[in-house]
Length: 362
Ligand SMILES: [Zn+2]
Image 1 (tube, rainbow, N blue to C red):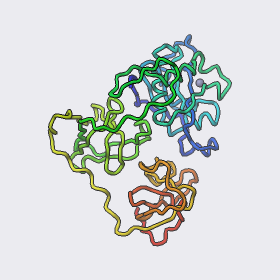
Image 2 (image 1 turned 90 degrees about the vertical axis):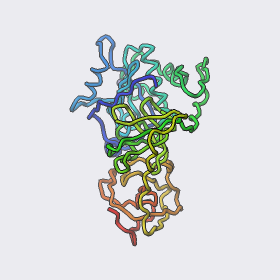
Image 3 (image 1 turned 180 degrees about the horizontal axis):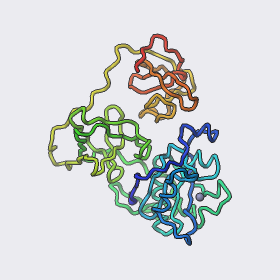
Image 4 (image 1 turned 30 degrees about the vertical axis):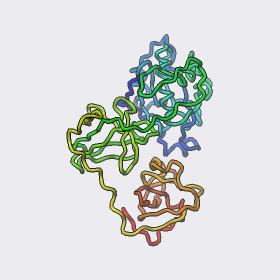
């Protein structure tokens, strides 16, 4: 990644993902990427000024990200709908990117690189111009075909895997995922840390996207092998409870990265967290919906659990420990959620909706 990712700005001007169905009549989905420009270059807008404007209290317009050459500010988590399209589908089902209207080659390069990174997380979602949603001049001079061509091309950034030269503008397939190879480096999370967010591999490592937390203080610190670095300060590690995840390890966090492949470990490897205590008794329920989603929390808008990207199909048997009361944000009611053997959550209505004989776990 050749751009700086800034996450310190937060706009209050959005519709929470859980409220999108009631506000827009459809689920919050990421099916498109909508391109904007900040406005007329003659008005001399600045990156900081646009970020501040979109983050203002009580505003009625916003976007997810503000981009110019070399930097990207994520001001609204993608799980929420920003107010950028002037159109229900555009707001509910796309990510809005605001680009510097000067449209320099650097602006194009960074925007294209960001699009490519978003594609890596969400799949190759089509680019839309703001004017595809709403009668407006936005995004002005921006050429979406050029942006798409750049996003599919090579950026000439050194990477550990060979980069295929792409002299022609046509690329037929996305690059294969990098092989899982231990980097030979080790990550130590200090014992002083109590809650360290971890993120699934298919989401940006930003607030709201976390799949869980590690608690190094419980173990006198935690040490992991680094599988690879996704960004200069974002490592991929394999955890016992969550599988492979991303973790932010910037210098301000106290994380220590040590060791080349040949160097001995400076400290003993810390124990891996023990799995949750097994329940004395497991119970079975059969999936009755076409699909039962397995989630990381007892909420309909919690992320899907690692290892279950497509849920569990009708007819399959769940092995569960008990149930917890949860909240269904789409129906404003309380609901029961089964706690699976692995400690994840399945909405009871999706699998028999029977709490008979189950222990209540919260
Ligand atoms: Zn626009």
